[in-house]
Image (tube, rainbow, N blue to C red; front, side, top):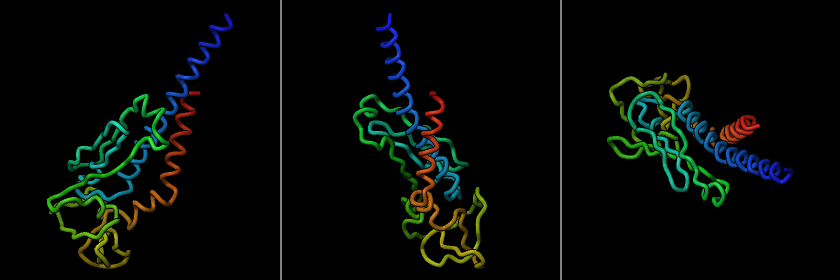
Length: 181
């Protein structure tokens, strides 16, 4: 009888560990994309709907279509990815393209660009002013001019390098652990 209880305990422990180590990274990736959509620029919505989450074997992509940001779900990890892959389980990227080609790096303030008015008002409130450089968010507060920005300068680097991404991962793992205990 004792042996059956030990086997059942080990089986339950295995299921809990698998649930935690697969769901926690998925939840962290989903929350990170939601944060990026909220913090980033939203003009037509193409950029915010062009995030994707990739595991080693699968990719789940946004629609890339205009409109308000849509929730993105992480692909499920395979058993091999869960056990055999290094610590990084998911990769998040953006594939935004427009009439003039790829613009994800410009939207993240990582590259200069030429910005054109698409002829429609932005979905998100915009700050008006004069762009100082070719960087999307480089519109200082208090300047006057025709340029518009729907996210602060360096919003992406601030999220990734400013500790917000680390906090998102930590909170997601804590919530996943509380959910299985």
